[in-house]
Image (cartoon, rainbow, N blue to C red; front, side, top):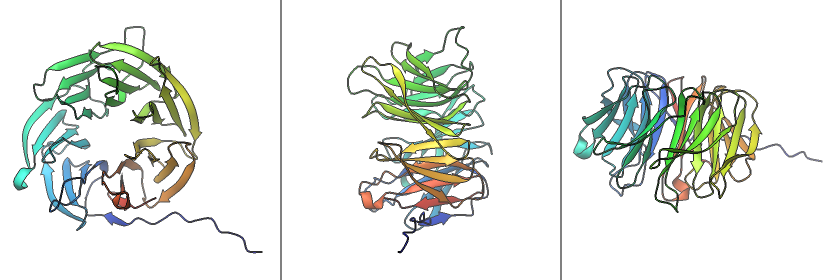
Length: 327
């Protein structure tokens, strides 16, 4: 009788090297029509942003605007020629990339010394959520006018610690955008942005939340921390946050979480150098991808329109980016 061997995890489709610094964040931009190539932006600890042509697997240009301080968030705007980046120099920069340019055309100062990444809502007006000056404070700005739309801070009795991760989104019903924030004490809060109001709050981790993502179609989100668990939670019809499921993993430490745009699979970046893939509907573990030699800091799915073109990228402390084609 022949025993069936378990399927081995795939190898990367390719990797990107020569970066010279830890890779902190990744962001794809792959929807522009030809002849524009699909792009991958990588923010690194030396303060540079590499712009990669995915077809040629080479750097098109390097952006240098954060005074050699680590870059830990990047995001393209509706216009593919505009990019936002957040760095440890306490600046959020807006870049003009049109017609081969690579210049900073605007910047927003921040007063937070933490590692909480901003969150962009590509609506009209463009809204940007960012950590505030006070420890637990978060703010939402109109990106064009730079005016504060909302400032949200727990009251003195709520000692939640620093804001660690956030996700800004717009419900299908209701006029106000909503903001999910993960805090240092392991809790998640749901805020009504226009009313500056705390809607719901749950504690789902015993350690600081490192990352979260949210599926607004199914009102379900997921968060990771320094623990060896993923917490899945949902928002019910009364807008109450409730823990839905806890998924245990082998080793502690989740640095980043990303849902694929089709909301079918989830990827996590692990302190144990591994990338884990889960089915989003059931949280069934699907694969453990092993390639990196150090902590994986970031995971990001491409926004290709055709399913067969979709990619997953992972950036690591080992100064490499692995690119995978899965499912």
